[in-house]
Length: 137
Image (cartoon, rainbow, N blue to C red):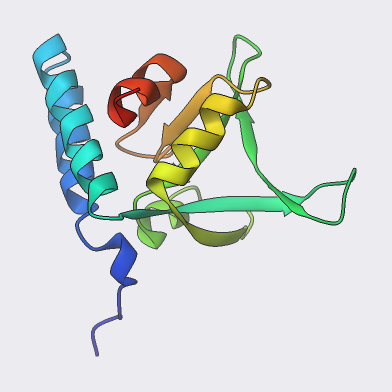
């Protein structure tokens, strides 16, 4: 029996394909195409999978962040549950969130640099400038 995909994730394979093309051909044109694909998914009310952890300072959950070699913190999101599982690490608490809402939150959060899509495979790092381009702000 085929695994039922969450409706909000349907179409995210287009993002994965665009990122794959960008990795093979890292040009400004291909980056622009990839950002356009992400914007299209956002306008279709696309969703991504995010990892959360308890926030010690409050009762709420907070998005998990990755720290890059330069010491910067990034939120991360996955285009599918399959992508999330490629990390092979501990099972994380995850939930689906709206792409547009996530991007707006990232821009408004000073402690992070941006969002890494699919950090384990077909990775795309969207800094705040790129997030603003996708959002059209």
